[in-house]
Image 1 (tube, rainbow, N blue to C red):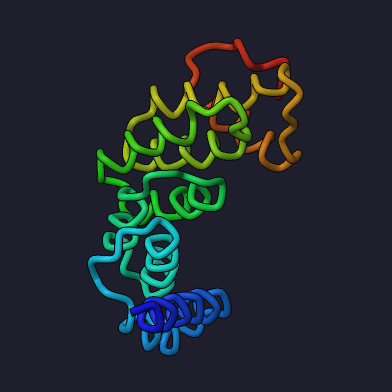
Image 2 (image 1 turned 45 degrees about the vertical axis):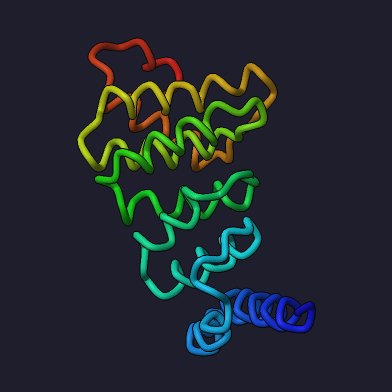
Length: 168
C-alpha cells in the first residue's frame, strides 16, 4: 500500500513541477493519477495551481477554499483568482478573513483586494482597503512607489473632498 501512496505523491509533485513551467498538458496528465477526493492540503495546493493554469478558476478556488492551513503562497494564488471569480462572495469573505486579518499581511494584498472590490462595484469597501494599504507605512510596511501611487490615485477618485490632496 505504501507503494501506491508514494506513486500518487510522485504524480502530484510532477503535476506541480509541470504547472510551474506552464506545461498544463503534462501537469494534467500526472494529476489524473491523484485521487479526486484527496484532501491533504499539499495535494489541494497542487490541484489549485494546475486548475488555475488551465483556466479552471472556479475549481481552483474550490481547492483553495478547502485548505485547512492557508500559507502565504496560497494567499497570492487566491488574490490572483479573485478577479476571475469576482462575483463569488464566499471567496471575497474568505480572502478578507484569512489574508487581510493576519498581522503580517503586506500592503499589496490590500491593494489587490481593493482592485477586485472596485471592479465589482464595492467602492466604499475598496476605498477602505486602499486607505489601509497606505496606512501600513506607519507600521513599517512599505509599498513599491507604483503601488503607492496607484492606491493614492484610487483614493482620490473614490474620496469626496480634499483629504488626500497633500499625498498626491
